[in-house]
Amino acid sequence: MQQNQDSKRASIVRKLRHKYRLVVMNDETFEEKYSLKLSQLSLFTAFGLLTIGLILLTTVLIAFTPLREYIPGYSGDVKTRRNLIQLAAKLDSLEQSSRRKDELIENIRLVIDGKAGTGRDSLKRGNKTDVTATKLAPSAEETRFRNEIEEQDKYNLNESTKNLAFSEISSYYFFTPMKGKVTTRFNPSEQHYGVDVVAPKNEAVKSTLDGTVVFAGWTSETGHVIQIMHGNNLLSIYKHNAVLLKKEGQKVNAGEPIAITGNSGELSTSPHLHFEIWFDGKPINPQDHMVF
Image (tube, rainbow, N blue to C red; front, top):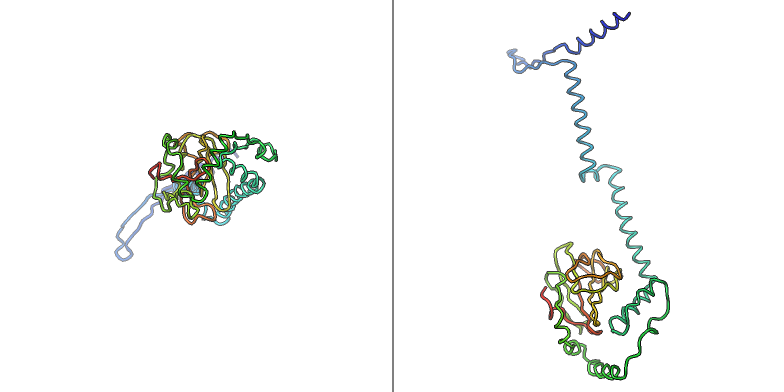
């Protein structure tokens, strides 16, 4: 019995190793053009290796190349997941903006006017106390000086901008937030209190001075906005960004990336940066202090 099984196995092995000759001949002259010696074992081996190679190649193409997005039933999952992530981020920003809208507007107004601190700690703790109640009472000399300045400048915004204390501003070395072409210049008469700068896509927006981020969020008109307080009532504002790299309360250095330029907000029609500088509650022409 064992001998019969061994003989059968030996017979199968001989058949697998038996050589066959594949010949390609001219049908008219019977001239041999090409011949190839094959065995069943070599043919099975070659077919198996080819099948494994095709499986490996297909796996690599699906796992490591963009071709996977063209596979039916797969591309939809990738796009849906990407859209859900973007919508979740926007929804979170809109919820925060709606919940703290009134507090932020009042807070930023006070910062621009130079009348109080940022008050962010009280907002984060949920304290709804009116921040105007925390203002320190100015001295009589300070009140008199402020009334004189406001009386001189209240009828002419352009003149008030020109008559700022440039002796104090000139002591700062402003870092250009982004190199590019200025498409819309500073024009307070048309309520355009900054400059619009066009630069390549995904260009980094950098802080013009050392300071602290007092606002980093979303507004429907200006999109992703970040505002930095630099001390001495000096505030810089960066609007229409695609992505914000800093959060409120973080310290930043001059020249440090704080955002990525974009086209966010209803007032933006193309990718650019809207950049403003405010000193002591008044807008300043950025082109007077830096070259874009």
